[in-house]
Amino acid sequence: MLEELTSPMVYAGAILCITFIGIFTEHFHGVERAKFAMAGAGAIILLGQYYGFYTPELALEAIDWNVVFLLAIMMIIVSIMISTGGFEHLAQMLARLSGGSQFRLLVLLGTAVTVISLLLDNVTTVIIFGPLIIMICRSMGVSPIPYLLAAALLSDTGGVATLVGDPPNLMIGSAAGIDFNTFFIHMGPPVLIAWLGILIALKFLFKKNLEARVEHTFDHVVAYKNRRLWQKALVIMGIMVVLFVYHHQLGWEPWMVAALCLTMLVFMSRKVELEHVTAQVETPLLMFFISLFILIGGVEHSGLLALVGEGFRPVIVEYPLAASLLLLWVAAILSALIDNIPFTAAMIPVLVGLQHDGVNVSVMWWALAMGVGMGGNGSHIGSTANVYIVTISERLARETGNPELAITPGMWFKKGTPAMMVTLILCSLFIWLGYDFLYVEL
Image (cartoon, rainbow, N blue to C red; front, side, top):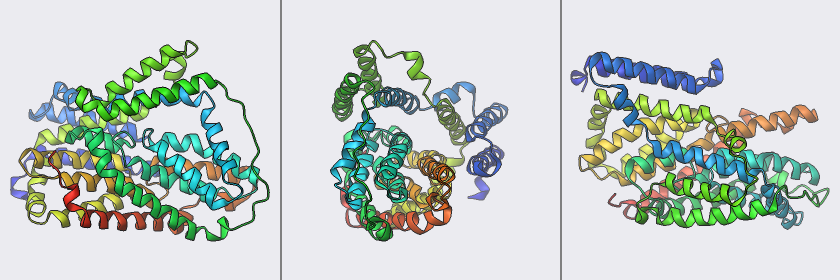
């Protein structure tokens, strides 16, 4: 294999490794990961032009605009929904339904987080529910730690079920040609099993907290900021779900569905100002994706990823089940230690190359989606949602002067990592026992 390596492949691989190291060590050096991705994208274009394997035109073609547009549009829709105050009312209703039972409250909030994560990305979900959980728990006189950790774990898990629930899913679905229905049909069952596993695990991991006496019932009420707009947004979300289900038959990419629904929503409310809602778009995240697509496209054009794919071909062809299980665990472990998006971006061209060569890698796609999604639960930096939850818990600890309210890396290792292991074991059993179900022609 090494004899087939060329100088462009070596240099492209070096740029990829240096860029990924910069991205993965963001928490140590403090430089935003988008900046490293931009630098890597620029370097691979210059290298490609010098050796003749990559050009700015090819770089533009390498960008998966379906992913970029869909992410941007969903950010705008969520921004509009947050402004209505509807999510606050949803959380308050769940708190009242709990009837003072902490585990019932955990299940209700966890269910809401999971369901919302099916359509909204996990970061947005925890940004919405994190402050609400703290408000509810402080009003009831209970510790918010079990609920905050549950929100992070279940948002990561719920996002695995649908094509639009997690950025890696968008990347996988777009690259592999998997439509919304196919993705949900095959990822829904293992996610449901993993969801139940996490709830049961949390019941035992936080047994002492959840059995503690509730000092107050929750009766806090906040008025809607714009109830009519919230109701209109729910109708639009319902239409979006239907269109996502039929987008393949309509010949539309998912971004087209989201764009149509956003257009309907802004026309249904004249008070929505585009300048205001578009200001909530996370431009650095979109720049990160664009740069990452350019970088991986350059490495692919150098021939390095095809060479790696050829190295894996015998294992995947001869031992497909073992290869799928191995990918599940490797993806999960790496996603617990580093960001799952770069790993997904690096694996996609390898699997696409094998798929184009006639190798059925359908189970590998599902294993990759499960691994990077569930693996994010393994550490406090395993996903952006986790980092956000840890951050607001640390802020709460400072404000209250109670260090026990901060979710530390040690606490996550004791509570979050075991929950991740439960989901990985359940997913492994699902792949093993349901291999024929997951094996489909794509």
